[in-house]
Image 1 (spheres, rainbow, N blue to C red):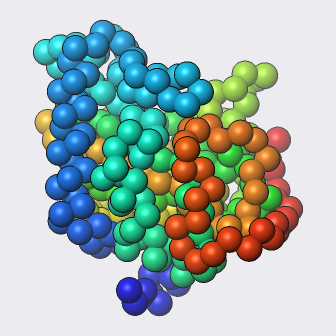
Image 2: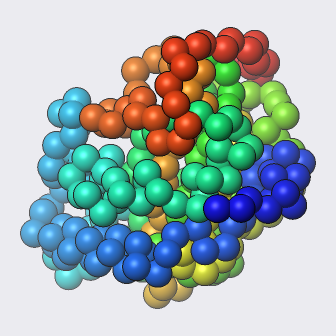
Length: 270
């Protein structure tokens, strides 16, 4: 499909862009129906359950909140491994076309998950950048967040810092402990300069892997559910094992496999 040059320019300037109608209504309906079934299934579990390729639970629930009466499913790891509808969308969506136009004509699938904020779950995400979790030889990595519900200012939208993809990368270790979040002073500055990524179900936010971002818990009875896919340029190779292992890791979903490796130095704020 034709890709808007304006979206490419907006992404290059800010490090993220919102795309309307990233998936079709039929794709959206199939994914939400599956997720509704998974949420209903979670009522029968008191804690995390299921198993991923590395033995960790596939379905994670919010501690002290989740119950049969009020399910608080908060994450599904690598849904593409257990559901063909999610894998079909990962291979074919408009946001992938835009990713290829921005990063490289040759794009690999890397990882996926579903993040949920269900009413009453109090799920929030501290500010961080994605790249330090899964560093590669270059930074041509895209996080695509497909909205499975309308995302509003009230139900915990993603908050991003425009231009933060230009660096530096901030440490996720604080006082010798891995927190998965940036230092408090960095977070204060990030909150002051963040903008929200909102939109309708079926839209998507495409985010560079170095963009500073976080989100607060939902304040409404409306859920906020996202299908999150990480794509990488085919010439980017990982330094560490995939944090969300999948049998589809490295599958070329646009273009072709070249076997090349491109290395680009990056700045880390330690």
